[in-house]
Amino acid sequence: MKTAIRLPSWLSPFLIVLLIALSVRLVDFFSMLGQQPNIFSVRDADGYVNIASNLIDTGSYSRELTSDPASDMTRPPLYPLLLAALMQLSGENGNLLVFVHIILGTITAGLTYAVGRELKIPPQFAFMGSILIALDPLFILTGHYYLSENLFMPFWIASIWLIIKYWNTHQLKHLLSSAVLFALAALTRPVSQYFPVLVIFMIVISGHHNRRIAWRNAILFSVVFTSLLLPWCLRNQKVGGVFTLSTISDINLYYYRAKTVLADAEQISQQEATQRLEGEIASLTASNNASPGQVYAFMRSRSVEILASYPLQTLKMTAMGAARLMLDPGFSPVCTGLDPNNLTMECFSGEGTMLSGNIFQLMATRFQTMTLIQKSMLIWSTILMIGLYAGYLAGLMAAWRSKQWFILALALGSVLYFVILSSGAESLYRLRMPFIPVMAVMSAYAVSRWQPKQR
Image (cartoon, rainbow, N blue to C red; front, side):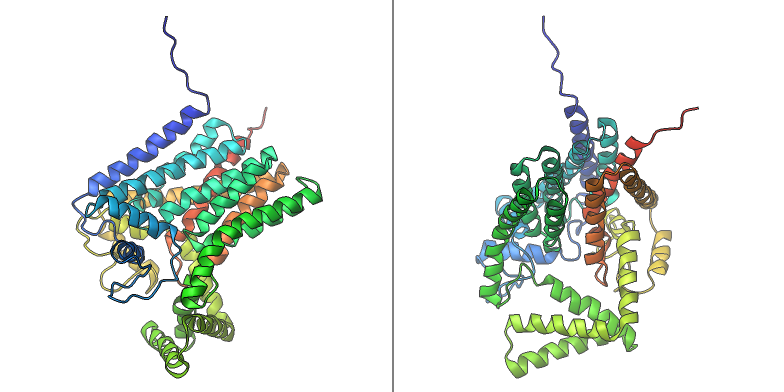
């Protein structure tokens, strides 16, 4: 007599999450394939694609498609290397690239379930949290874009999962494995490179081990993490005179934040502010024959000078950036990714973007011309976003009441970290993506802890 194959209790919900996440992403992709010429192209994608193309054609790591390209120091290596490998395999066919991105997005949803279960959330509630990621329009619609977020997210969520696993088991192998994945995440998106400082702090002060073991583990974690970043930092020191993982933070500080504050403070246009700042760089280069390292150092110091000179405008710029980061339901991907007739990379006509003009007026005007499916998706994204914030706050309160200080610190620190670093004139909806799974897990945690009052 044959016996039925029974899956472990934890595996069945996990596989269902993966199946749902994969299905909705494939439906979205195939429904738009061949209708939208620029479906894979969004702002910033060209930089990654250009580096990948140069790696294949000339072996150079550069964003410039010229005969003598300069070495790029803005993009860390992992995502361009992945693109180059996939482009080499697929040739002119981009479907393989998109399929890999979709698989990565599916893995992110599955890892969200794993994080929930590692926090001892019952399977049905962990499933609920991960389904929110599987069905989140931001993750679905950006899943076929050539953007590093798609590779970053599995590294990032797996890092969080392993840190929790270390906390539960006291096993050093999980801590060191998390250090490796945190490094891979930083080598994909450099914004995450400082987060391990919070992890080290939690290890040292937690009382999880005695003080000697805690310091030993923190040092080992630091050594593994920094040793994996060191080669790329040394590479940038060699080619540009800057010992850094990426110079993108200096560029954003100068050409987004300082420029916006300068334009607002002196009542000039964004274009005029850009020309003025570019002129300062040109003067520095012409007079001192400045190296790339000197240019980036100037950009950093000049940006700090401008921001400090206009504190009210700096506060305004930061507040508006935080609002875009936290409250944009994904207007641009819904607008462009679900419109076969849109042939541009932007949602709005002309030069308008979510970073310019009257945001609410632009959104209201464009919403009126959207199709029913676009409006429905945007409404669902907005409802989901509001629900995630409410669930996240409820989860924090539940962790506080039950004195789960590790859960509270990790959940609060993960969100505040990205909000603080990403709130500026360059803020976009997709910079919120790293902490959406954290909010989903905390929402599931809150629901699992809720007990109705007994009569």
